Length: 130
Image (cartoon, rainbow, N blue to C red):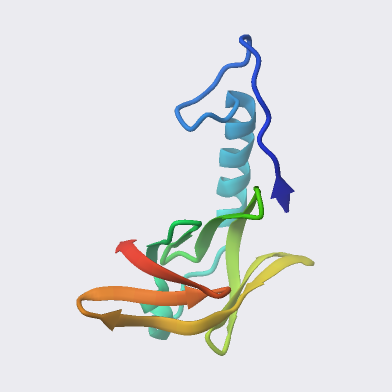
């Protein structure tokens, strides 16, 4: 889903992230609802857990199966928040019912010179925290 930035008026209430408070509250409630649908990651996939970053992408995978993703590309922002439904080989599918997104993992999590790396949708990410 593509979103564009809009300027806010002086009467808009803004939180610390620059997002209108009403929209921020909606996202938090939606995130809590969707995370309730999540299944914990299997033991053999716990190396995916953590906060993964690059300049243009952020990916958070929790052990309880909750996923939060944000990517800046072509002047827009794409965000996905929801439960991790399944792994297909190294790839993983996030979403509920028919609204799903498959993240293509060309390099699964692995350690390089003391840093954990993973390549998702063609972008190399570094784990910044577990």
